[in-house]
Length: 166
Image: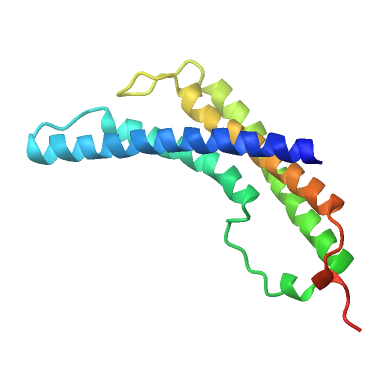
């Protein structure tokens, strides 16, 4: 279990660093576009496309980090009333749904990347499969994080607050 958590931590750290680099590129592209358009009155043709593609990749990578950190928006009114085994079962079902979503993203992302393998982006002339593969990568990361979460739930020992109050 510790090995799986260590692998998860390494992957999350790499994804975080990649996300930070992508975010910096996104900010620089947006600032450059504003500067060139409004100060120099000469708009850049490529900066909007670069920012859009950075945003897509950042979104797909960031979704897995939110899964790992339980950062997605949730409504826990009913979940908070559950304890013990019932809570574990519901938590596992939730993670299985996330895992299934990741498999759908992986399948659809691979199909999308394959179908766009010969296309180039308009301004940057980047192969579109590089952009569209972000969906498949996001799906793999979601599946991995859901798997880790299920393993953590199954291996967790019962906490004091999970014990029924008599």
